[in-house]
Image (cartoon, rainbow, N blue to C red; front, side, top):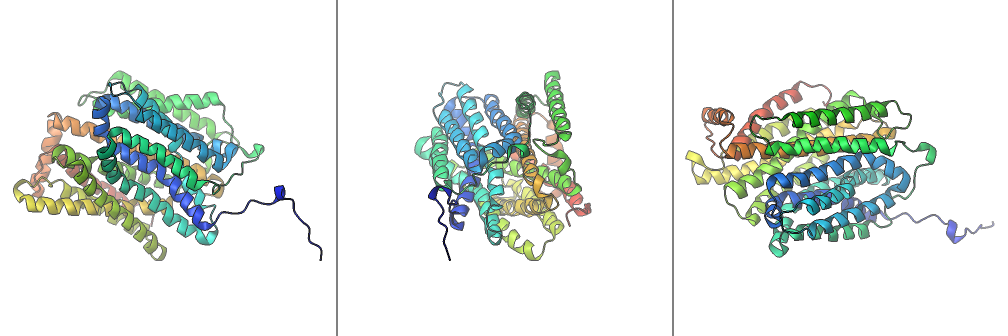
Length: 491
């Protein structure tokens, strides 16, 4: 029997081990969640250290958000032409560059360099979530459940670690250390993921097509929409300027025109036709509401503890991480339980009701007439229940939304889902920041009076702005619970 030798240059590349692939999956997925958690937790020290106002710092969020949404539109186009290996390497390079630009920003009140750095971070880091999720499909079928666990642990673990890491970095090196860490982390992720990502590119006749001119039009629409969202905190109570409404209308029209153009293309950048399915569309709505709540809790709890109750950064980080670690545990528990009892509706309804109870408890953390002991207990229970509730709601949505999508549009569905995630988080943080400022300055007296009256009727007195918003969220969770109970798509 003869043996045919194969030249070395023709030998197939050795497949990386499963452990190496899982490490790469975790590292890539963690980038955006860890860095954004650092920046969100350290927003106050960053503004104080760089000497910028809250309204100016809103431009920093707008720059990141616009770049993130644009790159989510462009994700598939780049992957088809570069392959995931080159795409992730280039993204890490841009993300690291943006981190360095932010870290070297002057502390003179100028926001331009800081905004440029965050824009580069958005261009580089916003698509790692999609890339990490798609890497699960590169694992052997028998290892994909491990990949799913790794994915969930990476994104939630990075989010849970961020407050403690931010507090430590702020203590060691000030606000600039939050961004220098991003540069170091990008280098470590690049090293751990080397050789583990697929390098193949799509054949030219299979690639999606779109003219760069249209993509620049999309960028303009995204920037306009993100600007409108970030203007919410600086608008006067009840005031919507004509310019604000005009930019919102034009931006929405531009993005709708782009979607209509994509609808008719043979190889679209995003295949909207393939995504028009009842389960997927209902899932997007629930995703938007779930991420709105996630953004709200990520803002409100640190705000209340540090800004209103005077907790130190370290104490605030410990309390915040307590809730986020609860989320990690519940997410993993839900994955295992749902394999045997896949009752999406029951989990979702439990999550919404727990969220309402958590907000009700957190609305009375200041103690009021109930005394300090009850305040500490309410803080502990509310923080833990909030952490437990969000995975119970978002987890079933994540499992059910993509069930009926064919493989050809799966990545397109994740792109759109993450665009919705980015816009929902931005809208949540902007809206509630504005609400907290308006309540703190004595505006919105009618709303404050109504919420305080509701609290008095329930026997839960509220006084501070964050407490009012928590009670408002508890009340508004009830219509969401009713919607979950009545819908028939996620059963």
